[in-house]
Image (cartoon, rainbow, N blue to C red; front, top):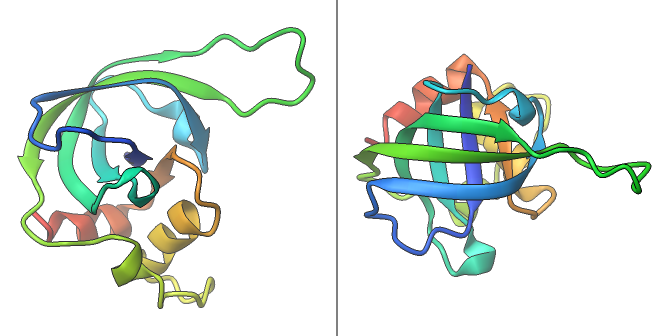
Length: 136
């Protein structure tokens, strides 16, 4: 399975990215070593959307806190960059894809990343991963 992460990315040109205790949704908690990840620099943090593709070098689940009844699973990951995006893909390009049932890769990304604007790691479909490959 492929994954995508939307987070603060200060240096999109970095060779390695470290994300600590990232929120996960839509299967993101299953991210593991050697998985492909598409990195989106969060517009909420001054980013521009899709910036890179990488491979998970390490992944570790954040332990649950016993004092909290309800909590979102979190994961810490280290990602080694394998390519830089050559075309833009961010909130502006995806916001018009709002028919949640149309099955388009753009709609899947809009739904998972921008319907709820928090930073997170999400699992993505094979069709969406194939679509994202066209940006490299």
